[in-house]
Image (cartoon, helix red, strand yellow):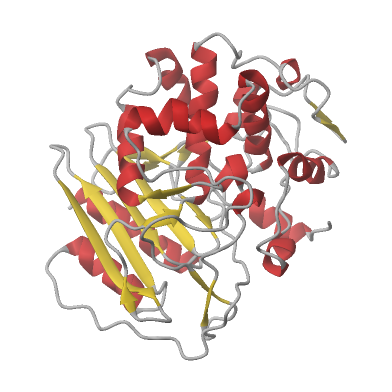
Length: 382
């Protein structure tokens, strides 16, 4: 599968996987949500602006204060075909937030003495990472989790656009990446590549002898009480439970296409999971309060390098499966964010326990994404 240099560059530069996919069922006469009522709540105003201005058909959010008080928000249409509203606390595809879950499992294995963070990947996946300028004996586990390995991106945007329901085996994704030369020598640069997390997912399965989704459930979602969070099983193209539909416009002024149902296997350990805004907040609060990782491993997760990527907020830094973003009111928040066809999520948690997650039911362009990020900052700083 070939891909143009400009497309490969866009994937490498993005700190959040932001793809669009074709969907079945063009909505020839899309429904229009009722105009939002006036409100004094700044978070609600931000969400209403996203849906009113066509950034996405719908938006939803969950905001937790430092004292634990929480509120759900919704705006816009949850289903353009029926005109139904966005369901409060609905399930969504969380894209690259999946990386934080995968990294947490790897770091738990580090804490258990099963994996050496600064050991070579080849110790666990012998002979797997080989290619032009690529050698798993010279790439460490840390470099996978921090995007400093130099592994090239596997994603082919056109293939996803053409057939969003196609299933991909993880090894197939990895093989596509290994057909390309390394982007740089391990440890010499930072560049976002989903291939790192396909390799990390395979490492988890090799070390534990169990499927990645099962390890995420056993080690994270059950322990943190995440009732609506899961990695879909092979072949599962649905979003369980109450959920808004996800959409995409092929042109700026074209109709929305519904592509809620798709095969997320091409995201897998890098971006395949489903969750809710409230579960994501619960996850990041549990993670950064030390409930999921021992202090030594949490400290390693928080060791960061500068992010040099188009669209990243100034001062953004990347740790092990998480990023740190400065706030306008001072301090930083930790999380990841993510996007894949139909849904894009933004948010994280602060050191005092405040948590915000906002989801748009589309993948916005650069300006739209900046508005969503501003909404996160507003929710933290108001």
